[in-house]
Image (cartoon, rainbow, N blue to C red; front, top):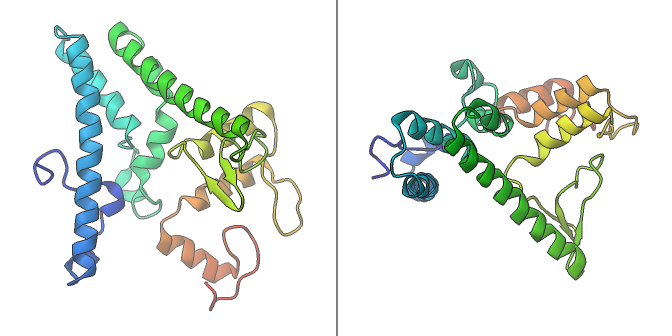
Length: 234
């Protein structure tokens, strides 16, 4: 039951002010129910598959497997969430994108859980790479190959961009830029390479709650990309 103790709403539906409105409220509540049901079914079947393969799994293994599944499906653990929920858009989801690779390290000492995690990650990356290769070699579109480009790992068809990585592409580019020393982004005003700190600041700015991002735009008369924007356009 989506209203039961699994959790009645996902992070993107934490605010329920508009759900009381006559027509819009029905649409939002239906969308919330769909998202909760869909994600809980994914979590349930992933857990059930592990239990089917390991019917004698210990309580510790089951807790570890559940922990990894929660993180993979967007339920990360953001320290100090009571503060960050006013600053970031969906802080647990943002944290989960960085915590996903850590799950391998965290549960390394549990062989069966470790194997399940590696199968999850390997299958996810392999299937996405296969799709990108299919698009690229079929000529249906182009695929971003350069980590210095914001289209890296995305499918580009005409003016449309399709990001199939569910929020992992952006943190991956940030990490690649640190490892390789590449300054992947450029300031759109003077096209000069951004320093690593500026790049991470811009990344965090994208993840800000709308009220905070809008307040900054109003104070500085610029949009997130750094271009001038008068207050009435904001």
